[in-house]
Image 1: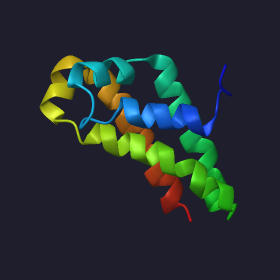
Image 2: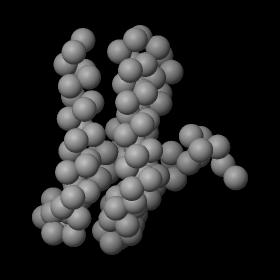
Image 3: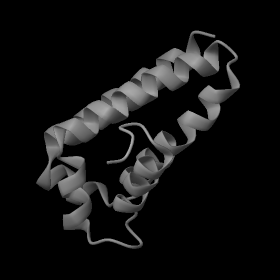
Length: 105
């Protein structure tokens, strides 16, 4: 079993949210997963804290999270709004959290 926070696992999440590779329905099933959202939120929080504390590892840990967010946001918004409105709001909260953390520096 992979490490719960391994680079391979994060790469598989990046791949799973890539709209150039997967169907929108497949990506939405990933986005709807509460454990996925929790994992994304936790990694975003810990990595952004490391970046703000000038810990270089934070930047490398933040990159996959930002790639996943970019993949999700690249989907057509009208599809996300119609299929999983509540999950879109979770992603927006995550993005706002990161923006607020960066604004505090």
